[in-house]
Image 1: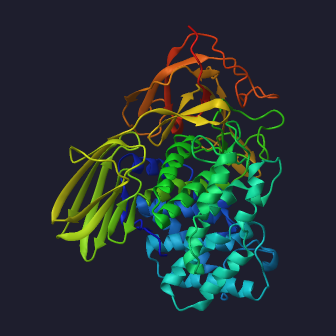
Image 2 (image 1 turned 45 degrees about the vertical axis):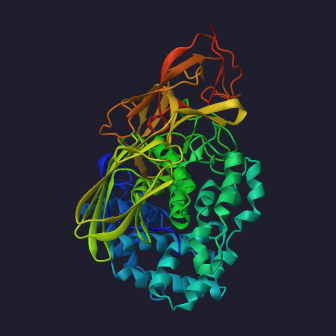
Image 3 (image 1 turned 90 degrees about the horizontal axis):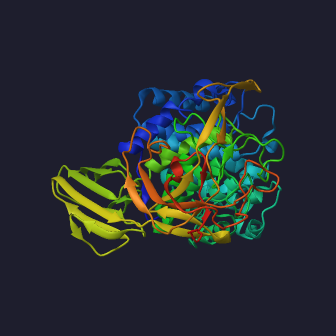
Length: 615
């Protein structure tokens, strides 16, 4: 790809600090253990079993593989290899690899072909297993032959996710540049795939109707389609993602940079859900878009989703997750009758093993590892600090080994120390992205004019230290219907709602839910009918503990004043606050209150009105 930046591998990047701790929690939790306790991964048809043989094992491996290599965990790497070994063992002589069972190839949705080819590409980039390029070559050549002969065509999921195959096709084009069929397959995929620009009008008016064209995960995947495909197709990049993102944001955007989709687009509302799969796929799209374009808007959007929406929808121990999160979420117990969601069921917002549906169970694990792989990116003249969270890059630059270590507690603090260690003098450059919210930029102890990128060129042998700091200002971000969200840097802050959790253990469809991966019914037990009574906020810093996004001990809080209002419930519900308050008149005097990061909350109020205090 001819993009601005490219990705380093898991062998070149190491997570440190709170990021490493977050990955370790994930490895000890659900995503790190699905092969041991979840039948759809443990006993999958992909490895010769009799359980689900379509997307769940590839989804799981897509996060498990980079997690294993980032942590350099021997046991996890061996378990990943065992799955890859079996998958490759079952590949047929003609290249077909999916366990379609009794389903004829003509009726098999080849989304699984696109997905497994992407996952094997991820495995190759991590492991350098030389079996993989040939296996992927045969997968995609067989896919081309089937499509070119018109024996099969794209439909349903593969039609709407056609671009996912370009992760593998770009690798193949790099390794086998003279193979003309690769470019021909690229054209077929686009020709048979959905043209999202032609259906964007459907995104403006949400319906209680399930459609592929409004499916939230399809749409968050789709944003990277042009960045992935345009080079191989020989097309000019037009920033299609920004045009489509603008429509999604205007009509379905949330306060934390995601889009409502439960499970199809759900409109502008703080009480509609956002599917977890869409969160991690949105992150992945933003990572590709920033790497390809170098446009800081994608990096800033990535940070907002990563530091808010992702941690909020997964439990602190990462053993349970929600299918759908709500921005204003005052209760996570089953709906007794009609759910608030447009097309999801009564338990989609519970924290559990597989609430509503198991795709997110398998897929959510890619979020943190792929973010870690985006901390540093390869530039044509060196390296870029793209997402400045604690990490280390060890790379070879024109024959000179260079190690760059970033010590920071960002996004909870805005101070950074880069240590560049080079074996010999090198002309490698280090670029450091500075976010648009930064104020009072200071470099190596000196005030520096604000700019979006800092560049340091050429390093002597030994260690070079660069210190960087800037400030952020807590402020209100306007939301629809006269509501506001509180932002501070990349973090969004919420009023936490205290809760009581009840464990629910049971067996359904031969799948056991038991602690720590049981379901939880979480009931709000503190006031949530609150409004902002001040535009002023004071920042208080706490320790970053063993749990980076801790609800009981958040690393950062904001102090302000709130008051009560007659907010009311959404009509027909007693566990969902009204979409907008019934009244904005204060019922008491302002009182001091603490807001915590959205990513630290379980139950919360995030979009609030600003009212004139009652005296």
